[in-house]
Image 1 (cartoon, chains in turn yellow, blue):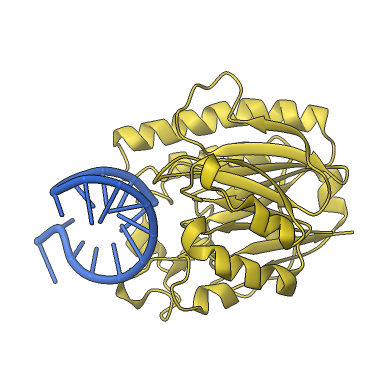
Image 2 (cartoon, rainbow, N blue to C red; image 1 turned 180 degrees about the vertical axis):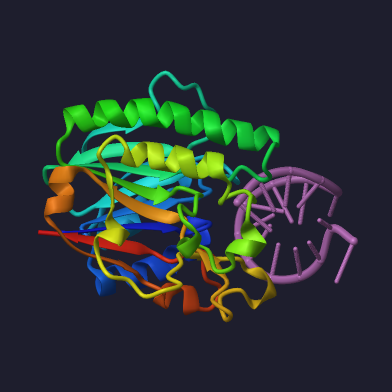
Length: 254
DNA sequence: ATGGTAGAAACTCTA
């Protein structure tokens, strides 16, 4: 079974690339972020024709998340319970005996800004809820754009980025707090090439220079991690004409 | 110097 996460940065623009990528990657689940679509405009029919049902929650212009799955999705839940938020960043659903949580973490904009404070509050609420989900669902996978590069090896130029948003110590501590619940960073269960990243800024030829960050993650419960046989970043879609600035990350579970 | 690019939408904000 394969599960993937991809920040598509507008599903409207990226739908043709997604439909081209699905038969190649053959994922059973895909978590999408930054769909930037109101629910009425979600391309459910096109995805159904490609073999995927969908649970989605979006809004105009910003944010928006979705879970695509080949198997029927049940127990769909929206947002973080008890954390009031207009921004559509969280959706969870169950299929094939796996609980899947799809996240689009706040970017934070700049350390010390209001958006940064919101990011840390969001992570605080997330941690409490994920603890509950973990207790309810032994086989749990948390996938998404978490907007944190957890370690210096996840940053192309740690000196340049030191203390900046996406890399700052409070953000890294918030990310580690998820691991402390018992989740594993699937990517680090395996040997990986140095300078492996999942996001490259559109500007300054960042992708060409591999000036990226690893901010898209797949976290697995102990039971799911035990059955995990691979985790890769698929850079191919980032090479396309008019790409998303993020690459998909894929895990395979036995 | 606060640059540069992309997306959505509307002449700006977010990333």
